[in-house]
Each structure stands twice: as structure tokens, then as C-alpha cells.
Length: 174
Ligand SMILES: NC(=O)NC1=NC(=O)NC1=O
Image (tube, rainbow, N blue to C red):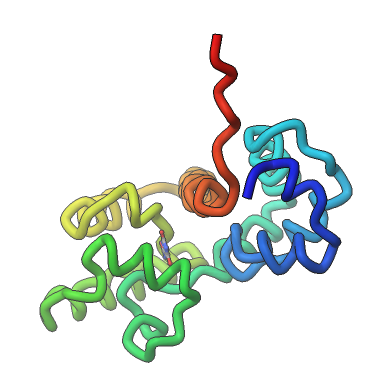
């Protein structure tokens, strides 16, 4: 759909469409609906970013906790959302060796124990090697820095999901 179609959606259809742009957080779509009509895709995205940035730390951590582990229980059980399934598969998470799966589980467990939320990275912008490397690297961050790093990754994931739903702004031909 294009941005004018998105602007014309009923509240229910808007949340049905955009409710998982931020993984398992339909509140974000429900909240930004008030800002329609959106001039373009960029404004819609900016409203999502603005909503996330204005959350208190506890709210940001709540968003992070709604994300499934990479190569974790939900992937093993087939209970990922379609978006996450697509993203994780594309990054090779569904074809890890048993050793790689065990390493991801161990690193994810240590990371969650340290930070209190799961390791999050935009899977579509990374591959298996990059994910493992960044998981190790970021584990050394302090809480505040890592929270912002994870939120930045949520914004990248959301941006890609949004572009799957709404046609980019039509470039005005000069
Ligand atoms: N913990 C995660 O990073 N999860 C995910 N990243 C994605 O890009 N999709 C996910 O499900």
C-alpha cells in the first residue's frame, strides 16, 4: 500500500497492519494512529521512533523484552511471528549446527543475565558470523549503552518491516 492508503485505514485495520512493526508491541501503532495523516513513509517512521525515544527506561526495556531470542526457543518450537521467522531464517539462524545453537543459547543466557533483556540485532542486516561477533562484543557494554544499542537495532528492524508494508515515498520525477 502507499501512504495515502495507510492514512485511510480504520483504527482497527491500522493496528492490524502495523501492530507488529515493533515486535509484539501493537501499542506503538495504536499510539501513533493519532498523528495521521502522515505526509509520507518517513513521517510515519519518525513517529514510531519518536514514541520509542520518549519512553522511560523501563518502557524501552519492556520493548526489548518482547523480542524473541535469536535461534532460541520460539525458533525451535516454530512459534516466532512471521516477521521474526523470516528475519531469523534469512540470517541463517534456522540452519545452525548443534554446536552453534548451543553457543548462541549460552551467549544469549549470559547476555540476558547481565542486562535483563535479550540480545537484539537487526538480523536482515547481519549474517551468522556478524551476529555471533556482535553478541560477544556488545556483552561488554554497560547497561545504559547496551540499552540504547538494542533500541537502535529495534528501530532498524522496524524500519525494514515498515518498508515491507508501505511503498517508499514516490520519488517526484524532476
Ligand atoms: N533477538 C533478536 O534480535 N530477534 C530478532 N532480530 C530480528 O531481526 N528479528 C528477530 O526476531
